[in-house]
Image (cartoon, rainbow over all chains, first blue to last red; front, side, top):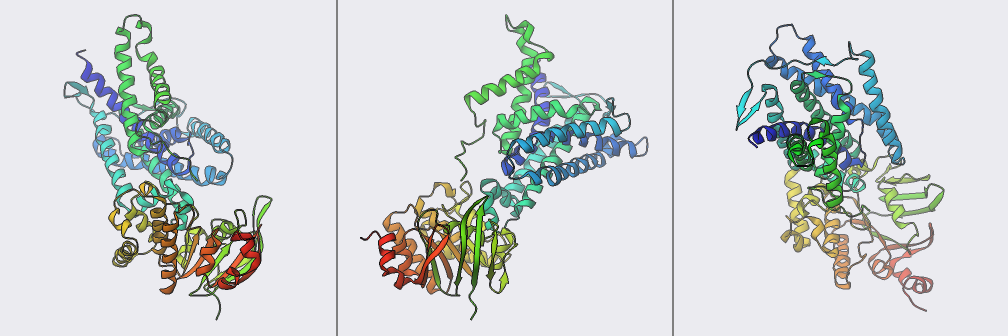
Length: 309
Length: 238
């Protein structure tokens, strides 16, 4: 058990990424009751946006200097694609049966993956993402790569900013009102179409930030990376209670830590040797999801929502 | 003088089912006009169309000299038409104070908003005492007070109230009706939709009886209150 701090650190780093992506699922669901299954790809294109900015900078630019511009590039691409998806793919289907936007989302996912595969230079392979040079750091008994510090700082900052935005600003209050009762929000003079765009944009921006974190951690971006990350983040959103922003981050962290601990320790349980290790980590993540859905269907922080009028 | 609100030959349908089948009426400034009728008569549909939540099939709506057709719901409140919807429709997880602030969403005069919130608390002291509580924790009558207060926060020229007495105890209903009377004295124009015909007609200047999407009878409140057919159909007399 000496490696416990290390496993927890790995889990939290991974979980913070899940949480940042999960915000996008949960905000969009909270406002329009739509599961935007293309959100994983909105995350993925953000990674390519950041990489493109890096490649456009003069060679020899240090990563620390390049990072703000890369972040801006990643966020911009994700937000543009996210907002365009809302405007041109989902908005025309508002009021349609729920299956229609769901199928649209899956189609959009495939289209975005294939667009990168076909048109991004060398997009068929994993593209190398810049890495921070230098020794890993030791924090509270765990070894943490320099690149991972990014997400450990970004996640709490983003959550604080989002929390303040929702609770304190006029637009944030309009967003809460729209989530609770869209028709009545319109009677107050709230332009709910604008609020929906805002929810998509914030979710996409967080996905873009998560994509930079992912690139820094894994050292690559590739056209398929949105699939499993998106699925995990969606799981995190449901785990935390879909519609609740703090639930999304909590769900992400719980999922990340659970995955990390399962990978490390399950094989030491007598009789479970064959279920440990990295190959089984996705299975344990989804087992956790099923358990939560069975025991607490509204998620960790979700409320039992009465039927909407 | 032209009326504040003029509705001409309004028709509204849900798919193929026509819920409002060509109604016309006016609301003169400073008066209380009521639409009464049973469930399914088209009263709520009429209000939801006036506030832009539903799109009419045909018909003309003129408010304060300007057509309202095609104006999106969130722009209609800006013109001075506030709607307190059926079933109250508060934002349950927001506090009483936050609900009231949302009623003033389009206003920029912070000082005026604070003053108006205080006016609502003066009108309904219980709301002031519980201002930090989520509105979902209020009783039905208190929720109705808050819904009315929230609609007043936009300083409307016309206040539309949909079934304010629904589900309330007789005492609470009396309180709500007294408030409507008081608002009228203060000069607020009100379009009141009610199933409780007795209460609505006794405070209305003018009333219209709706049945299955049509206005079947119109007159002054006092006149309708004493009309034999109304008494029979809506006031439970033989």
